[in-house]
Image (cartoon, rainbow, N blue to C red):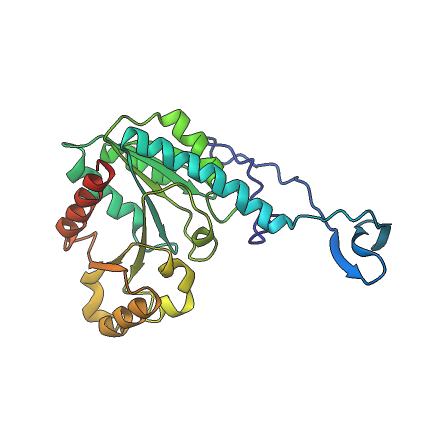
Length: 279
């Protein structure tokens, strides 16, 4: 189990092997450190099998919190990913959303418009299957699937492994379609240049208030399925106010992956971001 979010992600997931169960075994440190006036900092070790405290170490050694250590390793790899992208001038965009918001359909539309001028690559993150990767390849982009099993997010190590296999060319675009989840992916830097959160008008105007970390860490919000606005109770002004209160710098574009509304604005945003990676 992941100590950061509680999911089954161990960091040992396989890329491009759909439907295969992943190992869920990894080390757990159930020790904790506190102080007594006479001894100073020391450590208690908890015996999982006996259900009680085991040895009592007064050596003065301090135990590093595993939760911090996991993110530290991730962030170190993310920094290396970022340097690689910067060196090759690859625009890396991390696409995050809840399930069913329309990430894959938006990517299909985007690939069709971008592939004539840019080489496009996609890393697909899902718990099982390579259904979305197949769709992306049919749209004209090179894709690689990462199946996370019971894991609820991608991490920087998974992206590093996938990038080595994709070997993106200079001045290309790499989209990372993260696992559908608005909680855990917000904490994991993958080395991306920009993070884009997608919501659909069927999800409610209070989404930014419920998932503030995701909106706070994103650069752009795509409000998808605008063609359904006449039939749903989505208050656009309220949503924009909530999003801006969480992140005043957040850009917003209303789109419909079905009708194509707003896709040109989205494409322009990508082009401007690509220019920034070359400066």
